[in-house]
Length: 287
Image (cartoon, rainbow, N blue to C red; front, side):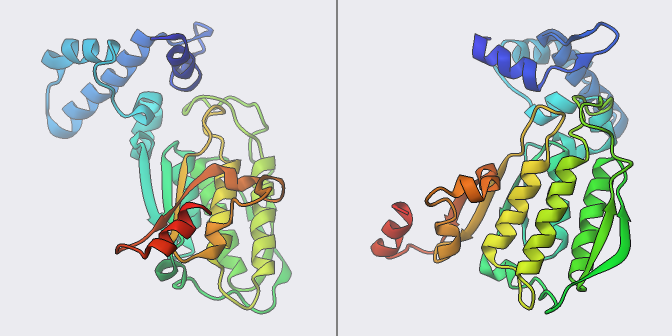
C-alpha cells in the first residue's frame, strides 16, 4: 500500500485490539474477515472454504481483489449481529414516514444510503396537522442503533399526529465512550438532541401541508450529519430528485453551507425517464 492507502486503512478499517493496545495490521484484518466468512459459509451453507482460503488471502493482501469494505470493517461480532453492516450501499424512496428512521438505522450500520425525494414518492407522505402542540409524552432513547432509530420513528409518528414530545437521552453513552462491538467511540447524546430539534423545527414550519422534497432531503441530510459511525466514518448519501424540481436544483446554490451545512452530506442527482429537451438539460447542467 502507498501512504495514502495505509492512512485510509488504519483510520477506517483496522480494528483496535484492546488486549494489545494497538490497531490491527493488514494481515490481521484479512484474517478477521476470512474467519467470519469461513464460519458463516460453513454454518449457513455447509460450504468448506478452507481449500480456497490461502488463495483468497493472497489476492486480498496483494490488492488484486477487494471484498465489501463495510464487511471488512465490521466482520466479527458486529456483522454477526446484523448483516446490514456488510453492505456498501442501499436505496430507499421517501414514500413513507418510516423511510427516515430506516435510513438512520442503515447509516448507523455504516452502509451508504441513496434516497429519492421525487414527487411520486413524497406525495405519498401524510399531511402535517395545522396545529402542533407540546405534550408531556417522553421518548426514552435506548443506547443502541435500534434505540436511536426507534426513537426517531416515534418522534416523527407523534409529530404527524400534531404532538411534540419530550425526549430523554440519559441512557445514551457519553461522547468518547468505547463501542466494544462495532468499534470506535460514541458520539454521545448531543448529535441526537440536535437532530430531534431540527426535525421538530422542520415539522413546525410545514404545518398544515406535506413536507416538500427539500424538507425531506434536509431531514435525511441532518440524519447523515449526526450519524458518526464508529467515530471515524461519516455517512455516505446520494439524493435523487425530479429534473424539474427547482428547490432541489438550487439547494447548493450560493452560500448554502452557512445556513444549511447538513446539505454537504449528500451528493445530489436529477432523474429523468426520457431524453430531456436541450434547454431543460442545460438549465440543470449549469445550475
